[in-house]
Image (cartoon, rainbow, N blue to C red; front, top):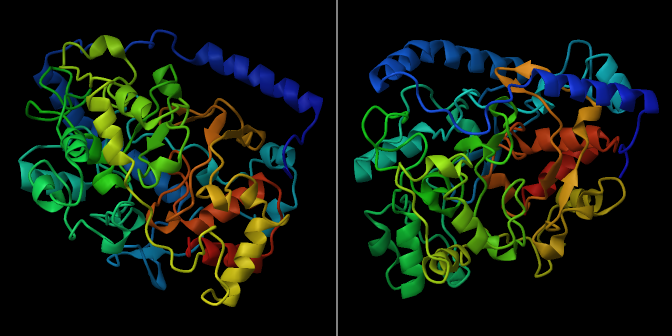
Length: 465
C-alpha cells in the first residue's frame, strides 16, 4: 500500500535503539496484577482524593488533541433515529501545519519535525496505572435504575463527552427476524427485562445464552474483595454491560495480552453486530470463533488477562459443550442495521444513492482510496485479517502520555464498516472521534493524497453502509 516501508536504514537503526531504550525503562515486575498493600478504606480514600486531578489531566489531554464540541451532521442520525452523527475532523493539527502540507511529507520528515497530530497517537486509559473497565454514565444510571447494581467507580469517570459516543440504548436487529427492525423497543436489555422483550422471538437455546450474557459475574474492579473500585461490594459486570444491546456504549478497558501495565493500550468496546461473519475476534488475540471469544473473555476482559487473580473473586467458567455454545448461538443472530441503499453484494444501488455517495464508493473501491483492499464489501467490509499500519514511522517510540508508554500498535484486525456511523469513537482504542478523522488518518498513514472533495465523498459513502 502507498506510504508503507518509507524511510532509510539509518532511521530503522534509530528506531531499534529507541525500542531498546524503552524496554529498559519499562517496569519489569508487572506480569501479575499486584494485590493491594493497604486496607480498602485507605485505598478508597486515596483514590477519591486523587480523582479530580486524574480527570483534569485526562481532560487536558483530550482538549489538547481534539475539538470536543457538539457539531452534528445536519439530518444524519444513527440507526435508532435518536442521536445525530457528529461532523468534521476533530483531531487538532500542530501549529503551522495543514492536512495538505502533511500529506506531501514523508513519515520520516513528519517524525523528525514533530508534526504528527497527537490525536493520531495511541490514546491512554483515563488511569493507565490502574486500568480496568470504565463505563459511560448513561449505562451506569440505567443499570442502577433497573437492577440496583452499581457500575460506578470511585477512582475515575468516563472521559469522552456523551455526544461523541454511540446512541443509547442502541437498537437491536435480528438476522432471524429482519422484518421486525429494532426489537429493543427503545429499552436497554438487562437481566430484569430480557425475557419479556425477547420471548417468542428467539429459541430456548438463544434465550439461555441471553440470560448468561446478562448475568453479572465478578470482575477485577467490580467484585466482593478488597481490590475492587466500587464503593460497595459488587456482584460484578455482564457481557452486555459493555456490549449494550449487543452493540457498544464506548466503554473501555485495557488490552489483556500486553505487559507491563504502562504499555497496555486502551481497548474500546466493539460492536457484536454481524459477528456471524467474523472469523477472528479480539483486537490482538485472533480468537477463531465466537465460542472462543465468549470463553476467553472470562480471563481477559473480566480479570485483565490474569488467571491467578480470578479464583478468589469468583471465576465463572462457562462449559464449552453447553453454556458457551448457547452464548454463541445468541450472539450469532445479531444483525447489522438496515442499509437500504446497498444491494445484496453491498454495492450502492445507483437508483437510490446520491451522486456524492456514488463518487465516494468509487474512491473507496479504486486505487485512490484503496479502502476495499481490507474492507471488502462482499464480506461485510472486512477481510478477517490483521494488518500492521507501522504507525511508529510517524512518532517517537517511548514517549509517555498520561502514564501510557507509547509503543508501536503492531498488527490490528480489520473491523467491519457496516453500520459504522453507529460506532464512534473509532480505531481499536477510540482515538479517532469521527468518520472524517478516520479518513484523514488513513489518508496520511497510507500516503493516499486525496483531495478534500474525495475525503468528503468518502464520508458520505460510509454514512450509507
